[in-house]
Length: 269
Image (cartoon, rainbow, N blue to C red; front, side, top):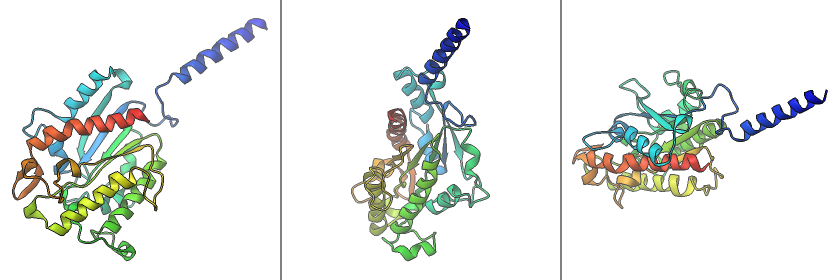
């Protein structure tokens, strides 16, 4: 009997030690325990993925990050990318992401990725920067209206779904800025205003409507990496005066910042 009790105590201590030293393994056994991510994008995101004529790529920056932080095995970060939603004619604007996260889009089922990827990263492309007005509550009757009110409404709903999936880590990019020839002063200023709210108010838990920001979500402020003070994409980061796609200089600047800020935030939780 005494041997049985001793054996039981040893087994209990070993199990307790393994549990305490586990690498934040998700409680849901169906969720991957690896630090693997997937980046959902269209053309703008593909430019930043690289190399896009630059000397770096997001995967290269992740490899460097892992090396610099001594991360190996399941502790190491990996990331894949996907043009998604994958129909070439599909948009990836905030109204669409709102429907996707609330399972209202049968052509883009985000739930297929929750158990296979620990980190999910979403963004819209530069059409989302064509904001027309500050807006009002009645705008939600037409979710496709590009107003700040609607965009905030979309983001709050998206975040509500994200925070319910506590075993996943989500990254949401702010808008992609437009060059002067593809927008106007009003649209540029409104996009600048919305993205400031997303990073400086919402993400800091200061939005009076949403309140505390989810700990499993990170806002990557892509807009203000490349925009000038007026909200226009700076010419040195544009493919052309009439083309808002990020060029090689934008990739060189943003890819390292994206990796560092995202993974730093993940590790800080």
